[in-house]
Length: 424
Image 1 (cartoon, helix red, strand yellow):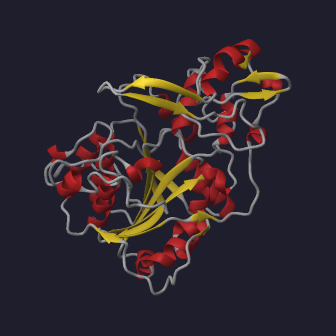
Image 2 (image 1 turned 90 degrees about the horizontal axis):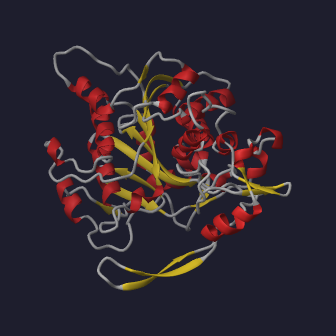
């Protein structure tokens, strides 16, 4: 299966598929082209990490929209993308709305939302058999005033291009990984493929048993006769994209999309599923380096911990005034501090690095000392090889940023094995 990796970052998808190959004792998955470009950044560090690992061949450090324009230009003969089977990528969750139908490019809104439209363009031009995307879990409930609108637009776009779409929100720690990272994964298959035909023949069975996601990450759910209940939960087949943008679930308090589902011809089957896992669980302790390998700058004095770090992580209730002048009570729950070594890490975020005290950075207590986590430890908690992000020109703070932007590679490993067994 030939793969192109968009918004590749430091190569989380690629590492996951390479691990799947190793576990399958196969060379089934092969990345044939990759793209990583960070706007407004002079130093393209993530791309340099990628090239350091896999070389410059078939790697692009160019604006994805420029690539789209060149692929779409007629008569130029200059095609960038090679033939491939599977498009993969993680991308920002922003504003995917359209003011008009897709016939008008001016209808695209949102500075980072345009990345979705770049994906859409590439899929529409190259028509791969399969697509695997990753995003933050709040995608299914954004924006706040129209819960689920952005996801409805994405599903509609993929369905209109002839894809059967499956999705699943996966918390990596619930399946034994060392980080409580919750993300939505979206798998789309051309409706002409044998696999897609099996999925649409029994959608609820596919959500619980036969699809890519339950095969990799087993679930349980409410009792139902899976073979007889074939009607979708709802349909958006009669809505133009501009109507979805304006009216979808307007004023709704909840999203109609649950944590797992299938979409075909804009008919939606969606279920709330529960992880069903009984294997081993990983934790922070298993990824800590030797004390001798921890630079002095990562240690925090007891005084600094008590005066600066702990107060940020403690529970609090603060009176505030809204923009309209109405007083309200802002509250935050307590975050475990220090972080428990025998549990998975909290979600690693992009601001994990640096000395500045923060509510969300990890703090551990080991051998009588408080300290932050090192880049190597952060890499391990996300499933990356030791020192994968290390280059002499890249500061530790940026290495932590990379991991905060990355996925848990083991999730892709398991999805790869599932894809191989069901499709390969």
